[in-house]
Amino acid sequence: MIEVQNLSKSYGGIRAIESLNFKIKKGEVVGFLGPNGAGKSTTMKILTGFMAPTSGSAVINGFDVFESPIEVKKCIGYLPEVPPVYTEMKVRDYLRYVAKLKGVEKNKIESAISQAVEKTQLGSVEKRLIQNLSKGFRQRVGIAQALVSDPEVLILDEPTVGLDPKQVSEIRDLIQQLRGHHTIILSTHILPEVEATCERIIIINKGKIVAEDTLSNLSNLRSGGQIVNLRLKRPGEDTEKSLSGIGGVQKVLGKNHEWTLETQSGDDMIEKIAAIVIQKGYGLLEISSAKADLEDIFLKLTYGAEL
Amino acid sequence: MSHSFAKTAAVYEKEVRGFFLSPGFYVVCFLCTAIFSWLYPNILDQFAQSLQTFIFQPDIPKQQLNIHYRVFLPQLNILNLILIFVVPALTMRLFAEEKKLRTFDLLLTTPITSTNIVLGKYLAAISAILGLCFLAFLYPLATSVMTSLHWAPLIIAFFGIYLVGCVYAAMDLFASSLTESAVVAYVMAVIFNMGLWFVGVGVDAVDSPNVRAVFEHISINNHLMGLVEGTIRTNGLIFIFSLIFLFCFLSERVVESSRWR
Image 1 (tube, helix red, strand yellow):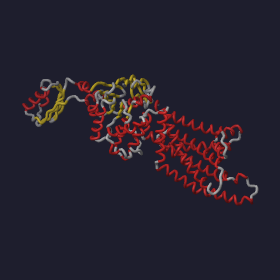
Image 2: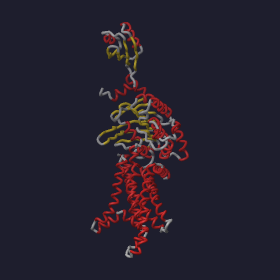
Image 3: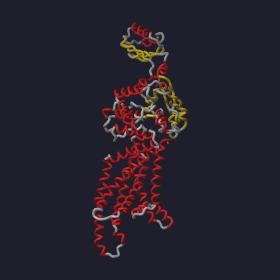
Image 4: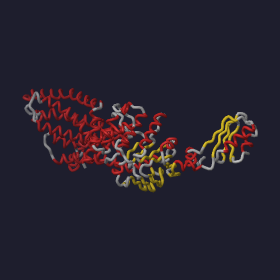
């Protein structure tokens, strides 16, 4: 469906992205993850035919984005970082305009608009001027705009930026609903978003792909270890020593009341630690285990060298 | 092809709505009518007076007794001056605002060509100018109630000024495509329009007959004068249409360039 080969783009002397290679199959939901300035938006702009790569190629649906941009654009719905809305237009008029630009057949335009409005729950504001809408609604108008031509590929550049938590979860639900009908590429630097919506993740940093895998495989990257957090009421001076003395504990961090232990994985570790703490009378207030989550992986892969 | 036309039509329709449903355009129309309503009766009155006194001035040139020269020509000169400043106000937002509001991203990621975009916007701009020219045409129309006019030269004259407005629109659209700021686009466009007007001044400023001939050919005023006199010359029309084509083409190149820059 989407095939990117050796894609590079430089602005002046600065390399925004450097020889990216990835493939996306039909119907996949792929998260494009990376810190700010990693080259996410640049990649998306190239995929949409908005700008040309310096070198390399991107093929969507069998069409090269640079050779036949019109064909590519026909099968793409794109939500840029800033929703491209005309503030002086009404929501429905705006969607009609976009539908015409995208070449939706004349007799299907109204039903296409109604569908997009329904999917993004814009019914209550469809006759209002866009300039009077809140940011959340504008963002939804932006998504409706990407959906209106019922494209095969949806490219969403940070779709939940600047929204309140309720709106964020609504947008996530929307993306969940769209799954299956469209191939979706989603860029973000917000991790829970990816965890909630994507099947596959491409992590990009400084213009290069640093990891590309399914969510479950990435989560296992740090398997073989777990982290146990402890909160104690009466820690003694020998606490550190006795904690590190427990079999299976690899590292002990913290002081006074808060402690973090890196241990081997396994349910019995918690049991062992709890037994020791109670036996020593430190006053156990809380004990919990944390799996290495996406956040850790992300930080390790992107900022790892600097930390 | 029909698809391509539909997309140009979509851009055109949106921009025309933008013009005719926005208060800005009507403010401009109001100012134009205010200026004409003040100056036109004056010009007409002067002409009426000179008609009454011409018996006492037997050596007065015949041209001075022609309403086309004494009334409509000054009116068109005023309209020309107005267009120099008003056309940039109409066209300045066509590209600059799209770039600023990032809606340009939308245009560039939908399956339409740069030619569609430029053509749609240009046609919308000249439709708005047609509205302005129609407003100005109301004054000679009102005069026709009081006297009989030769319609053909009058209509050709207005056609001429409309073509000049179309040249301004093409240049100003180009100015708008160059920048993100509507103000910069406006200033640049006014300078372009004045530049075109100053070419006409150049005709009187040079001595060499060859240079003078060149200036005469590229002076839009010269071609306009021909049309005002009711003569349609193909060389003038070709010159005007090639200017329009040139600047529309340049705008198209600028829009297209953002795809590969």
